[in-house]
Image (cartoon, rainbow, N blue to C red; front, side, top):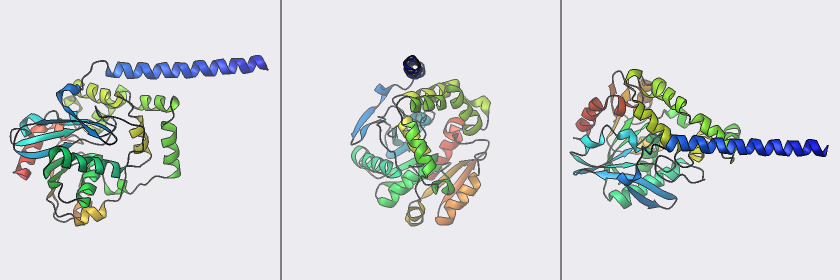
Length: 313
């Protein structure tokens, strides 16, 4: 009996050690190329961690906020920043838990990001700013604007998160999933399996791009690195737990800012999403970029730039 128990303890210890070493190896191989160089920007010392951002150009301020996923970062705007900086002072930001910013062990909520965006505009930009935001980060801007109308001028949302998904609140099952992902060894392994390069590549081909032949390997490699810098599993756990979701209808109905939704023609249910947003705020304008999906800023940057300048002009 003692021998069996000893063997079980030994086997368990070796299994845990093997998983730990595998996690370390996966993280090392994902970040070894150092594609996201932090020396190109600055760090804002925020209350919950250091926030990476860049600033370039002259003119009216423009804040670019990337999609809210563990692989996303300000690299999302790589094809547009140079052109936008000709007429604007362009700020890009890596949200907390993403890219080169800190990734603390905490529960990431809509209100946490609303406070981050508000503080960044007030303390770093220092002026009312135009903003472009992508996907699941769009509700953060709407909520921030609803809380403080002095933060923004014009708002552009690219393929914003659907209002239906925003109503999905944490349940017993998603709360349990969050706890599992946050566990030290097994949770890290689950996240590393989710953040494998093959899965990032599938995202680009199936969800981000309409034309898979336009996908550049550099994009996949950079998103892969971003998802493995620091410990992004805590943001992943909060996203899977639905802690970043919130009903934004009150803010959406009451803000008086100019809002422009730009959608990819092949984005899933984009026309329904635009109709739903417009129902609650009839002043919203919209435009569809043909033959694109979720990230037209990478797939069709020139056409997106044209629409941005028309709206901001």
